Length: 220
Ligand SMILES: Nc1ncnc2c1ncn2[C@@H]1O[C@H](COP(=O)(O)OP(=O)(O)OP(=O)(O)O)[C@@H](O)[C@H]1O
Image 1 (cartoon, rainbow, N blue to C red):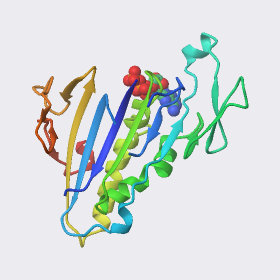
Image 2: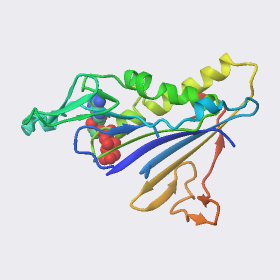
Image 3: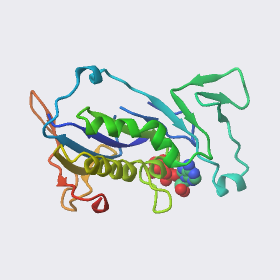
């Protein structure tokens, strides 16, 4: 089990579904991208600080290899919020949102992540992370590729759009990129930053990772 995460913040579970990363907006991680958004001026509305955790399931299609091997789908999306068992229709689980295998990453982002990015740009801490078994589609969902960009590039692009549309405010965007795998923390932005030591004092847990100012969405 592993997870991929993007954390968006202001300054101041194990999956049953082999072909579906469970996707949560609010983790232990194998790969962590953290974008820190500092709105240097606007105050945070108390109204908006209510905790709000949503859990989303995304099914990926069977791969050609899985089809060749005769593997069958055991769980499927029944409507927009229910996951049902193919062999036993009476077994069903409800989630905030369920996406079937033909859903695009763009759609997943729009429904499940866009509002977290918008909230972060207003100064509300937000985390988006994906977890699921190996090959369930976490990298596909979070990173994607040129043809189908993932949640992380889409979030960064959105953050820059919001900055452009809000000339009256000043923002500071910082990015760090960590991999946590088999209890080992590596800094993916600094080849020398391998097997980082986690330091702890009474107040905070601290990892000495590299943090870059993000000046353009294309630098990520
Ligand atoms: N929604 C999808 N549509 C089409 N192909 C997908 C989808 N999700 C994942 N895949 C494909 O399934 C394979 C496994 O996906 P991916 O590498 O994202 O899994 P992962 O959960 O990150 O695995 P690992 O934990 O081993 O890194 C990849 O070939 C990927 O392109």
